[in-house]
Structure formats: structure tokens, C-alpha cells
Amino acid sequence: MIRWIWLSLFVCFSGYTLLVYRECDNTQTRADSAALAGMQTWQDKNCQSCHQLYGLGGYMGPDLTNVASETGKGAEYMTSFIKHGSGRMPNFNLSNAEVANVIAFLQWVDKSGQSKVNPSAVHWTGTYSIPQK
Image 1: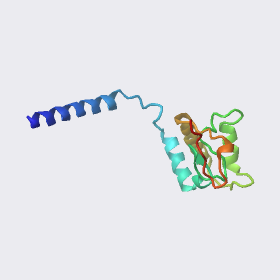
Image 2 (image 1 turned 180 degrees about the vertical axis):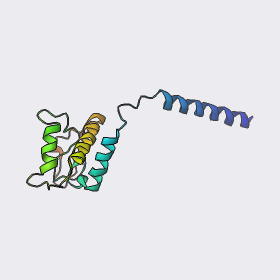
Image 3 (image 1 turned 90 degrees about the vertical axis):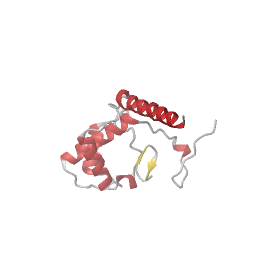
């Protein structure tokens, strides 16, 4: 009797697993090869030490989760900063392909989530508080 219960649970679990993996639409979360290469450059250059994604990372630079879709920003804006640096951001002397890959990565991140933390919620230590309901 217990054997049949375990067997039926196994069959149900296996069936549900197949259903989830076959029917789930992951097309919006899959990264292409350019985005994956850009993520590798992001990690190699330690960009997260200064920048945040989804509110996590350093606080010297801005959160870049949604920089690709922000009004007045986008690929040209990102290219300028990534290619040449700025006052506090160093010029990493990336190739044009590396810059394009980092932009592809940031565009993929932009599509995958949102990070809008109110600046008044950020504490001087770099942490932030989430308002209680």
C-alpha cells in the first residue's frame, strides 16, 4: 500500500515537473550570447563594486537596473559612459564589442525587473529601508 502511495506521488511530481518546464514561457528571461558576454565583462571589471542591479551592489555609482529604458537615457547614453568614463568612473578601455555586450547585458537586466528605490530611503551606510504597510 505504501509503495503505491510513493509511486503515485512520484508520478504526480514527474508529471507536474514536465508540465512546468515544457509550458513555462522563459523567452523574456533568456539572455543571448551578447548579454552573457556583457555579464562576464561586468563581473571581470567588478562593476558591481560601484553600481547596483536590483538595489544590490555599490553606492558610488547609480543603480543601473533600468538605465536602458529611463527617459533621456538608453544605448547612446550608456555607450558614452562605458566607453569614456566620467569624473568618478574610470575608463576601462573596453573594445567596441565589449561595450556593445555590456549594453546588451544592461538591456536584458532592464527587461527582467525594476529597481526604483526612493533616494530618501537610502541610509548613509548604503542600506535602505522598505516602508512598512
